[in-house]
Amino acid sequence: MTKLNSKIPDGPLAEKWTNFKAHSNLVNPANKKKLDIIVVGTGLAGAGAASALGELGYNVKNFCYQDTPRRAHSVAAQGGINAAKNYRNDGDSVYRLFYDMIKGGDYRAREANVYRAAEVSNDVIDHFTALGVPFARDYGGNLDNRSFGGVQVSRTFYAKGQTGQQCLLGTYSSLNRQINKGTVTMYPRQELLEIVLIEGKARGIITRNLISGEIERHSAHAVVLATGGYGTIYYLSTLAVNSNPSAAWKAHKKGAFFANPSFVQIHPTSIPQLNDYQAKLTLMSESLRNDGRIWVPKAKGDKRHANEIPDEERDYYLERRYPAFGNLVPRDVASRAAKERCDAGYGVGDTGLAVNLDFRDAINKQGKDAIEAKYGNLFEMYQTITGLNPYKEPMRIYPAGHYTMGGLWVDYNLMTTIPGLYSIGESNFSDHGANRLGASSLMQTSGDGYFILPYTIDDYLADEIRTPRISIDQKEFEEAEKEVKERLEKLLSINGNQTATSFHRKLGRIMWDYCGMSRNAEGLEKAQQMVKELKDEFWSDLKIPGEAGEVNQELEKAGRVADYFELAKLMITDALNRTESCGAHFREESQTPEGEAKRDDANFSYVAAWEYEGEDKESKLHKEDLKFKEVEVKERSYK
Ligand SMILES: Cc1cc2nc3c(=O)[nH]c(=O)nc-3n(C[C@H](O)[C@H](O)[C@H](O)COP(=O)(O)OP(=O)(O)OC[C@H]3O[C@@H](n4cnc5c(N)ncnc54)[C@H](O)[C@@H]3O)c2cc1C
Image (tube, rainbow, N blue to C red):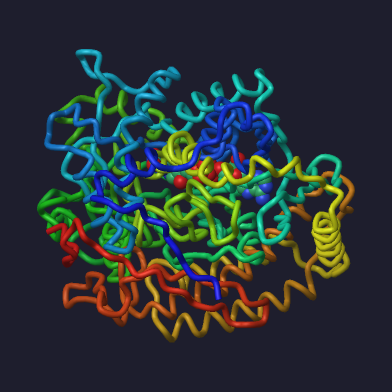
């Protein structure tokens, strides 16, 4: 049995990272040139890691399925990126950022990793500023900050509502510098379809060239997955349509444990679904809750136009229920509160599945120009999609699948349970426990890529300096390639009647209804059966037009949907196992009299790390016990 060893360095929490860096093994510059590293992913995590490793002198091969690295999903991030700079002098510190994340994650994250993420957050902001990211500035020229949910300080750096795009452009320029220097070779339009292990170590990947359809072998001394999250399992989500878990899932099937798969964040402020043909939902950034007030009518089924409902007939339910944090409660709390109001019949709009996000008071106080300066592009996006003008009437919003806290289990070094295989950014489970706080993902992904992995990977590669370049002619590559080809053939040969998208839509609905914002044992059991039946139908009635040896997006989708089915089973298994509520994982059987999540620390203060045992077998649960030495574990309250 593989034992989980989180490899947390000794010493006081605030000194662990410094101690690690002081004592870890290094690879000297001459040896770095002889070592190859594959980085899959070009979001802030992957492109950051590739740039940093290239600059250090490693020979980096960087892959993505988009046509250019700068189309990675990170480009969509809107609201901002956190750092403990305390520019506002409002009491922020590394410790407070760490504390907010631990509490925000409902005490289900590993202390040492979270502290380190908070610690390197300041380096990340300095680095992006040096790269020319145009963060908003205040009157005096300093970088400006705003607030995000679950905190009482302003620590979020932003570039209008396009922070991800601007940070990714900065990262793209650092990546291009390395491409130009020849330290990074870019492989766009390539999809990882298998990981290659030799003597138990990750030594390469098998990809499909998405233009020619050719299956390719690529080798390295270590492989880094920076492949993003799996929120798209719900079909409709705020993520890029092509975001998918397949790379992580392939790693899982090869022996990497998958941690807390059921911890999924449902974001409270998405534009509600407008019709049955939509392929995605559009996020309205959490930053809007700095100035927008959320409300529903006090009277059930009140169909008057929002502007006709006077103040005394409005229920600002977040301000009422959570006076200390008001509209800036964390996402899980805000999402559940919206669902509760809508389920009780107070929702607005034609479907009743929406609540108001109202800027009337902010515009009256600060003026339209000030609001436009902060959120102009978001308002424009909202108006383009809905036809409604948010300067004149409230936005209508509803929760949607958004982010996955679960992911590949990694130790302190960000290495999975497969030696030489790393997972960084959203693809790992590392820092956010059962609920991520807003603006802390860009912080973590960039921190992992630029400032953490480049140190920790040395510790492993220091023992690899005598390993010659890995040949792709070895039998392990041959076998992996054969498996990939057979799977593609199997998918193509079904020749049924339904598209991969139609299966994805049905699967997403099951997951949303039974393993979404709220879960119970009966629903989860039912969902497990429904997923199994739908999966059987998929493997007997899938239709993929075209061939393998050409551009074939239907084939790409089908491979991903096949993996979604397997991941769905594990998500439900994990949700069933965790009979407590914590963070975004709300088990209806475990709630306080006020309807808040009720943890069961005595039985569930652990990371659930699942080991793959075979397709028709139950996965095996390994527990990493969580020990809290620096924070007092208490009921999470935002009242
Ligand atoms: C609409 C939206 C707004 C957001 N706003 C914010 C925000 O304001 N602040 C914040 O902190 N967070 C925000 N987030 C979350 C944040 O954007 C993501 O968590 C983060 O960008 C993930 O970065 P990443 O580098 O880990 O992965 P991604 O950016 O998702 O990149 C994944 C990469 O992996 C590649 N890849 C994946 N699978 C394969 C494969 N099989 N083969 C080859 N390549 C592969 C892709 O091509 C891509 O390059 C937001 C999320 C959404 C959906």
